[in-house]
Image (cartoon, rainbow, N blue to C red; front, side, top):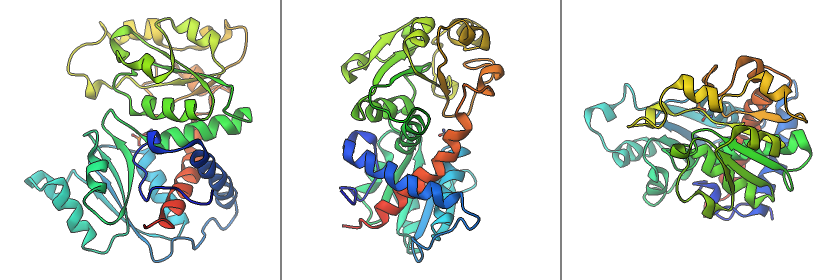
Length: 308
Ligand code: CP
């Protein structure tokens, strides 16, 4: 396989295992490139990419922009705050206006699940989902599995616990799709109120007990409590959440084996992770961020050659 089947990347659900492996193998090459003294290649020269962010972002946005610039693309950035969206302009009008400026690819983050899918049905440009509400965050899941592969040699056969606010997490859903396609076992762990009712139908194990999840897994991917998406209270207080689901060094040291700690960021330090874990040798959080650039270069490169 030399290319992806779709001209868009909307979710991991749509990808095959072979496509995931193609992205990883392509990212391996780009990782080598970005560690050279001259980090730029001409692969996307004359391609114009718009990063259209209707929701806040630090890592994804910077990482896409850097990936695009490393590939020599022309880049424009749009953020809904300070734009004419605030005057009532629709999503489609906003994007069509950007496309009139001859944009070839659109990287979009939006608070509404399905927004990039909607866009992909109405425009000619390639669309990449950079996170759509509580639905999917495909490039995050790709960089997460790529980081597990880098740390542990392969993803197949590994046990990965996804811990925390599963209900509101696009990272959880995309990770479950990616990890199960790649042959890993997945367990989700969190308070019952933050576990979706359908979760077992995705082929994952479920526990409410943090110690059980940590004793079972090789890798713990710890998620942020997404207070901005919670309209009601799902647990009594952050202090109580941290007491039952927060990971600290004492807890890790009490396990019989070392485990790898991941987090997509941004971290609520002292809530889901203590600093003595986030900044420890167990943590590959900053490697995840580094791998994000290579993964996004791979996705952009593969999609740009697929305009059908
Ligand atoms: N992991 C992630 O999506 O982070 P940002 O919201 O900062 O992009």
